[in-house]
Length: 299
Length: 189
Image (cartoon, rainbow over all chains, first blue to last red):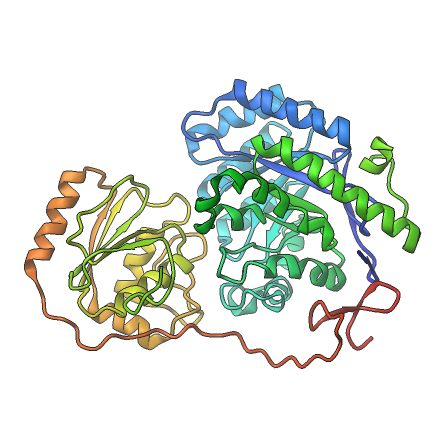
């Protein structure tokens, strides 16, 4: 447990604060709604209610992450966000296909939802059309993925953020700022097991000390891709949930923990970890937890 | 699991070492017959493709790759594999003509890619999910029974340079360390 010398940026989106020195704000928990096939919105509404209930109880903020696979689902999912989740609740949209990203940004703007939107994500595959769409329909916050196919070490991740590593014309941080997105979260790009997966965790304190930006990752992806864990099916979910502990332990600010139905396991684990960290850093560094911190909620 | 024929681990099943057909399965629930050399699943348009290339040029008996199933949404990994075979990579190591999100080849040298282009012909069944059609095509190419391409080619993973020499036992990374107060500080400051 440690604190950073570099000043740490804290960004707020619709009441949720992300970033800062370890032990001040609770780890923000981003849970995915993947909607295989036609979205089941009744189930989604219940899952989000459960997630928000955990936030109320424990303090760790919830960000539902909406994965949009097909154009035909864009409007349905955004209508659901608009009508069915609490009016001030921030959310993220997670889309791979650039065309869908562009259409979704336009519609988010039309519906007046951009102020609550975390755009997931900007990476080196960004197209010119996507850049234009981001300029015209700018989300309040964006996740930048520090994936560098040339070098998956923490240094490679920093290179992609700072100068684009000759893969793109600009560093991803500058590029994102130029598009008008001021609130940036850095995702350290967790890779598959056997492919430098630990670097995503090691990069967290490096990026925070270098750049002072809120940082985290989807360490769940590493567990999801593990083959040998198939031999230990009964423990898989626990390994998945507990792997998230690494993120606050290494000074990180948010975790993208996979399917939202893992919330029941992930939330208490991370709240527990946040409490441990807070107890130490308050005593040693004099860093007090925010009123929203699980240590304030549970003691 | 990696073996002599297939040095890079991945999500694949080894069948007949003498087989001339490898099968790449995209979004499809399909198990080919044991007559193929190897089959496996492709997800990503970068590392996934690198593993396929490395694991087919290491077995010179493989001369065809059948790519089947719906392509991976957003990543377009199947089309990226075909583009690599057809066009190779540009100066930035991007697969020429690939339209996936991040189609970069960073762990294979040009020689390995050339070898892949020369050794392998790709049979494009992207979008085809009818298992009878896929099987018929695989059998058709197995029957061609082409000669081996010669010696195996073992692609070397390009290692990151590591010139860090650290004597600080509490190091986290070459850029930062934890000082005696428990604060993270930049090295050299």
